Structure formats: C-alpha cells, structure tokens
Image 1: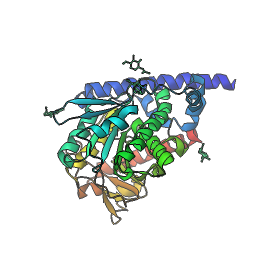
Image 2: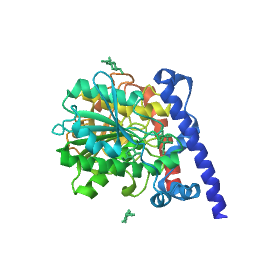
Image 3: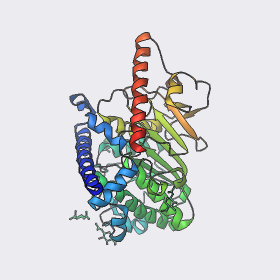
Length: 389
Ligand SMILES: *[C@@H]1O[C@H](CO)[C@@H](O)[C@H](O)[C@H]1NC(C)=O
Ligand SMILES: *[C@@H]1O[C@H](CO)[C@@H](O)[C@H](O)[C@H]1NC(C)=O
Ligand SMILES: *[C@@H]1O[C@H](CO)[C@@H](O)[C@H](O)[C@H]1NC(C)=O
Ligand SMILES: *[C@@H]1O[C@H](CO)[C@@H](O)[C@H](O)[C@H]1NC(C)=O
C-alpha cells in the first residue's frame, strides 16, 4: 500500500514538475513582454511545497536518486565552458580539457580572477540571462576579469527531478576543473561563481569539491534565487550553503515557488518580500528577476540597499528602520551577514537606493490589502508546515 501511495505521488510530482518546466520554457522564449498573456496556475504554487523528504521518496522510484547515479555516473563529457569575446564571438572549451586550454588563451588572466555563470533548468548560455550578466561585467567591471559560462544544457534541459540530482555531479566536475586551474596561477579567492536557480546548487557542489581536493575555499558564490523544489530541508551536502565559499551571498526573488525559501548564505537578500516581484505575473519572471537585479548592481553599485531584519512582517511595519543597511548585488561587502529586506521598482532600472529600505504605506486601502495578505500568508505557512512536518 505504502508503495502504491509513493508511486502515485511520483506520478503526481513528475506531472507537475513537467508542467512547471513547460511554464519555464514558455517564460524564457516569449520574454517578459508576453507575461501578461498568462497567469500563474495555482498548481505551480505547490512547487514550493516539494520538500527534500518527498523528493527523496519519489526519486528512487524513477531511478534518479543520488544512489542511482553514484553507481552509474551520468555522462559529463558534453559539459563545456563558454567564453564570448568583446566582438561576440563564442569560444567553447571542453570542461575536462579546460585546465590545459584556458591558460593558453590571451583573454585568460589568472591574476585578475574569473567569474563563472551557471545557468538553471532548461536554460543554456545562449539565453539572454547570461548575456545580461556578461554585458554588465564588460561594461561595469572592465576587461581584467573574465566571465565564462558553464553549459550544462545537455544534462539539465529536461525532467526536473533528474536534473535536481545531477547538479551535484556537474558541480563536482566543475570543481575538479577549477582546482586544476590553481597551479596555472588562479587563486581560489579570485574565483566567483554566480549560479541562477539549479546553477546555484551546481556552484555549491563545485565549492565543496574545490575544498575537498585543495583544502581551500573559493572566494565567492552568489546564489540567484537558488532552486527550491527538492532542495528545501535537505542536507547541506546536497545544496548550496554558506560553507561552500569564503562568502556566499543570496538574492531571493521567487522563494517558495521556483526558489528556495530558506536562509542559506552568509547574507540573504529578500527582495520585495522574496517571493513575488512587482511587474511580474508569471512566477518565472520573478525567478529570473534576481539575475536582472544582480546585473544592474554591477553597473550601479548603490542601486539596491537592504535593511537587516528578522522577517518581512517586521520590515513592512517599519520595525527595522534603524537597523544596519547593506548594498545588495555585486558590491555587497563580504563582511555582511544576516537577512536583509528591500523594495525595488517594477521596471528597469529596478534599484531605488535607500528609498527601497522603507515601506511606503501611504493609504488606507494599502493597509487593508496588507491585512488580507498577512492572513493569507499565515494560513499558507500553516499548511506548508503541516506538509513538511
Ligand atoms: C572532452 O574531453 C574528454 C577528455 O579528453 C573526452 O573524453 C570527451 O569526449 C570530450 N568531449 C567532447 C564533447 O568532445
Ligand atoms: C554584442 O551583442 C550585444 C547584444 O547581445 C550587442 O549589444 C553588442 O552591440 C554586440 N557587440 C558587437 C561588437 O557586435
Ligand atoms: C553529447 O553531444 C552529442 C553531440 O551533440 C550527442 O550526440 C550526445 O547524445 C550527447 N551526449 C550526452 C550524454 O548528452
Ligand atoms: C549530511 O550528510 C553527511 C554525509 O552523508 C552526514 O555525515 C551528516 O551527518 C548529514 N547531516 C545531517 C544533518 O543529516
């Protein structure tokens, strides 16, 4: 009987995750301009409920558990690192051959360090997301730092449950490659991994691997709305956590749906409450927004300022107005720790500087809307706790 129930939940889970992936693809291909054409389906909300324990039950039934892959490692030969020149020429490097190929390249300057962008589910470096970050790096940080992207699209293009397991293995291979670049003069502290969604957990796994093989941590990992489904309440060995780099900063923009609703970095920024972003109707839009905020922060360092607070409720009520503030994004100082909250504008440029640290409660109707939202939020969390418990 128990097995039947598990199988049923496996089917249910795989169907909604497939449904979710369809939505992700639609969101990416159609771009933000078409956001208005579709509203999020209530089913998608339930994605955030999928805790580690449920995934752990379901994955073995589908043959995609960690154990399944430990015995039979997925084929990593198609992983590549992508570099784009300033004239938009794409150079592709086989990941396992990168430690010998990269140091020969003129653009590679180990003294300056490297940024590596790690895309999420159904994405690839060709998508506009990497281009957004890459152009921001070129424009904002000059040409000393090199930015690369890991192309794992051959492995995390389909079937979320499998992809969510495989990120651990992809991260290990990336970690081996980064560790092998250290003898070429690349200091671990000059490595900065920027991972969106599943990419954030690839970054975590790579950080663990570098530490395991060299005894040194990489400098920084930025998690842009780290993927939530199958990663909530799981062992930190399986997901990004603050031990994975000297400094782990996280920007939450769709927490509880596609993003993880947990504090996992040295510093976690909860933008507009961390779940839904203004101007977004699709959840995928909110999920991607973290990336746009980060890119904007490279070009305008003090665009986003958050205030330290224990929770969103207190932040909105102005109870944290006198607390510490911090810049969010590329220029967040590595000494900052804790949870920070801020508001942004609904369209680019999103950053509103220090204005974003206070809630503009300018009316009676807004008060009522808040009260309704709080009631909903409380009920929501009760259901969620029951589900996870
Ligand atoms: C990448 O390099 C490895 C080791 O040299 C090789 O086995 C693999 O086939 C290469 N992958 C591709 C896609 O060329
Ligand atoms: C490279 O591509 C970006 C957009 O993807 C464009 O804005 C830029 O002008 C291109 N640069 C060159 C040199 O073609
Ligand atoms: C690797 O890429 C080749 C050529 O694109 C493709 O035929 C093969 O199926 C891929 N292998 C994996 C494991 O994705
Ligand atoms: C996490 O996993 C590691 C290795 O499998 C294990 O040693 C550790 O006890 C686990 N931690 C928790 C909190 O379960």
